[in-house]
Length: 102
Image 1 (cartoon, helix red, strand yellow):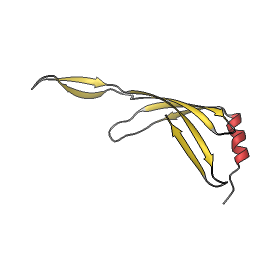
Image 2 (cartoon, rainbow, N blue to C red):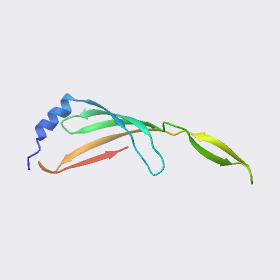
Image 3 (cartoon, rainbow, N blue to C red):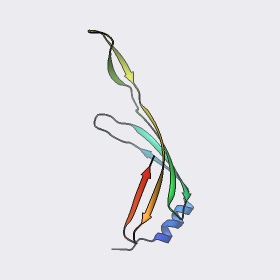
Image 4 (cartoon, rainbow, N blue to C red):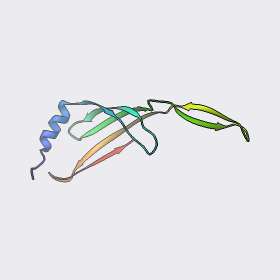
């Protein structure tokens, strides 16, 4: 088992301050397309800021009840905008903890 190179990881974090990720989250009965941007704020502390946008790529049919026997059928679209911070804590050369909030 090899040891993790923390100084090498810090150098990588310093050289690559901006990261863009395409995401495809799937829930029980729903799906979305998304993009997440991460900026390394303090590369030596492994602290970063994230901003995300997710959207359903299609309209989902829903029924809206407007009376005892009357319904409207609508197309529902969902968009999610999120932001947060993440931090990595090093326990030793083999174990680390990653925490994100937002």
